[in-house]
Length: 303
Image (cartoon, rainbow, N blue to C red; front, side, top):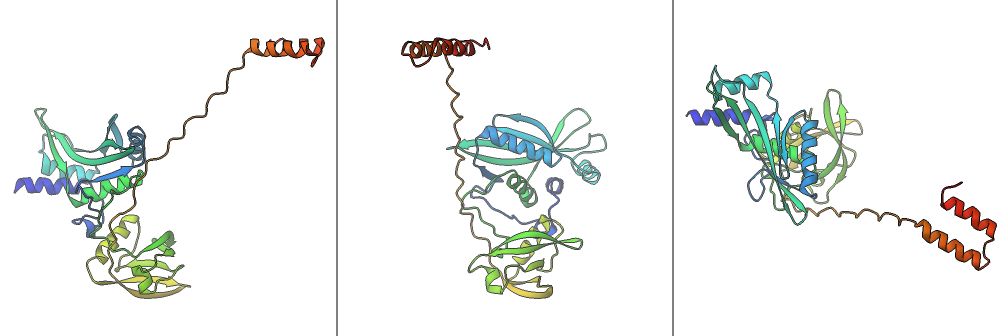
């Protein structure tokens, strides 16, 4: 049973995901791995992932031409839990890492991510436990999406009930809400009677504090054939019943960014050529001797 405990501990050491999706995959790629596609060369993607690590207050521990490794801080409770389950009283505090491997295919960077927790034992041995499971994969996929990644073609969303709307965030007291900007024809939202301008405050009984709460709500909504959506319309509160519709497989093809070649440098002006042109103009009577001398001094930097 001990290896199972280790695996469970490793899973909980990476995530802050909402509980409903704790044991469910939000997105399942064709390969089954945590991966995304970027429309840039690997050298650009290395910088984007490194920057996102810094934005998340992670530490970039190493980079190569095709890899980025970041250390993800553990809070005090996670560190104690990891030391209890993965080590012992003589081991160092655990550290967790995320590695992104990048490969270029026809101008597109394919990124697969993995992670592990490690600690050093009393006699210097490094003990490492791989991170896996829905919690880790959901978190790292969200991380790559925030860095500019796109799902591979054919990625499915088996635990995501989709309304089919375009929204913008608004604040409703201490909670977040979503104002409807656009509704897709034939979507679950249209069939339920949701309208542009409506402000959604709860989905399947869940309120929102962060984006993770929205994912939590869509996960809960996916469990039943119908689910309630609470909203306000022109200041009036109402509840509509929505028939469950899953998000369709991802079908947006990632296209490599077109690299714009740098503008050619301006041709260097030859002083000798310009003097020769002035001499010809003087001989042809186009300019006088005095004008010739003035232009000559300008070319030679004498005035």
